[in-house]
Amino acid sequence: METFAQKVIEFNKHLEFTGKLPENIKIMNPFRENEEILPISSRFYEKFYNDNETRKLILGINPGRHGAGVTGIPFTDTKRLNEVCDIKIDSVSTHEPSSVFVYEMIDHYGGAEKFYGNYFITAMSPLGFIIKNSKGNWINCNYYDFEELFNAVQPFITDTLKKQVDFGVDTKVCYVLGKKNAKYVNLINRKEKLFDSIVALDHPRYIQQYKMKSKDKYISDYLSKLS
Image (cartoon, rainbow, N blue to C red; front, side, top):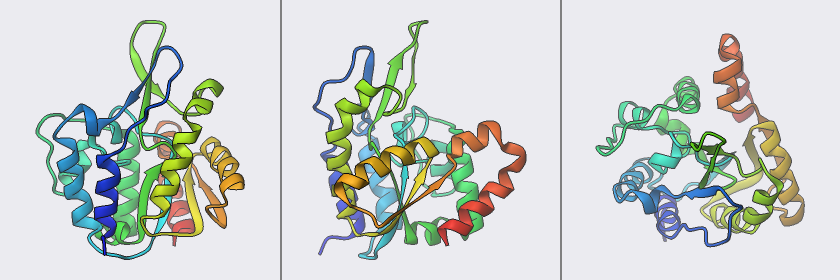
């Protein structure tokens, strides 16, 4: 019987978007863009998910350029991966505000081993997107930022979400990061009936950027709803 870790690693190994994206939008697939990432992320899952236990699902939006878009691990930048998880990436160094909040919350929960033993964090789209802005720079883009983009990736989102539920996820409840994200999770869930209920939480990026003075309150809110 495959462990939870083996299922995630196999999923990541074959993760690919083959559809057509709107003009000036590109996919971010760290597993294809950096040969170090699949072995590194595999070490993470082997460390924290090497069992057959059922876990509750936490859904982010899609990987960002400094977090999962680089490490292949949701809400985990290279600093947290090294300092908290004791797994080092040699080829790149990143700092992501969302990762700072998530790992502070995880510390209050009881640490990475306890948290990941109960929860599996992924994203509505397990691959990220970047868009070229008016200055010609590539910046983060969310799957729901443009209707044309959402329509293009909706089949991919639905298919990959179903596959991840099959890892061994408790479908009684799904925790969703980001209020707008929750709107689209509910939309897909009404069609696919994957989860009995959806619980929305404020997104870590929003908290770090706009609500830093109330961060402890948001951590308490996370812990209250997740427990």
